[in-house]
Image 1 (cartoon, rainbow, N blue to C red):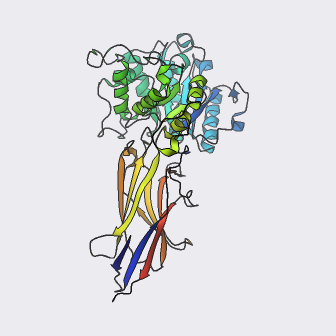
Image 2: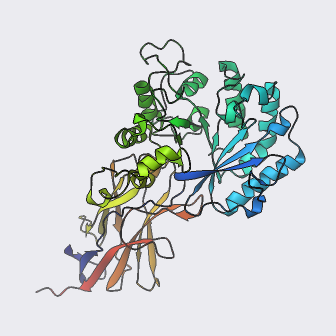
Image 3: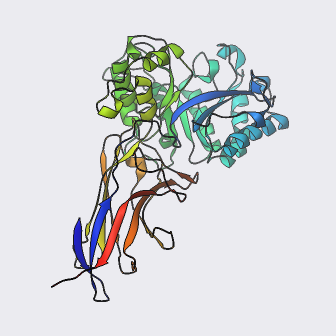
Length: 464
């Protein structure tokens, strides 16, 4: 792209846009708030990882995973308040994973034996008080605690086999945990029916309510029985949405998937795949994960399902994925995945000395990112002696899967006195102080976290 522009100094200059070549790369990106995770189990009265016996500060989180499911067993305190030592240990756990710049999915449990009713407190006041005691820690580490999974109740903390599944009890627990946790922390419920029951509605979040911070805008879902059966092992039921008479009804599979597709535009969803069966064969698995908008999955369970994916081709469209396994494709697409489709530079068209940059970007992932990142266009000299930043007004939390987003920015050339400038692009999470990686083959971000898109040449024009 070439053109002429008139600077205010009265000197004609011509510009030339020289984009760098790029294509999508077939690999998973290490970005915050999404991806595969492992489980790290602790007892509230022990400073060692269970069952390994490794001291908290010596636990090494997986370097290739941003998410960690941190499970903390409160069983020793199911009849009494948490001790000062327990609170100190929990603080050390949070500090350790924060130090490693991980986003924690935290699950507090009273049971790891499948005996929820037996092991959880016999008085709901004990649970409510534990939430209150933990409040200072939960709000202090809000930047690192991404999701609180469950309401502390049931077998394995999965909100089943519990004495506290009534509307009244779950509403009390949900409200208490909401008030005791950080304003940006999501709280995940085990079944879509629990979400409807607690908030007394058949309607999922809408665009106006999303990200407002009100209670239901912070409640998400998780599913530790993804694609295990027609009902995902009790996650869904046998009543159609049209025939539902109460908010707590569990709907048939298709209706529940449709509900999640709408709700999880604005809050995250994830969990475990289990029980190797036709529901988690490659083709239906791809469709289900997209429908659910899954953004995080357990990387170690169920091995039979994961191995099936690893030993099967993805079948995905596009040459770069044809020879990749289904597992590789899924790993690369859970959560968000931003790729640049086109970058153009042209005259602003208003008889000024400015240039217009247009960037077309698409989210190829199964889910949105659920966070508003900082997006900038950068113009700099090769030596970084001069750097000009142009923030773009866009909300990345609303970049939906497979939707193309067009970003534009007007670049002033008045101060550009060199012949060549690098045009760069940056997506940055200021909350975690972390660069968001793009799925393009051009060079990795430079030391400032900026991707090079191409060169803008500015030269004096010889006109006849």
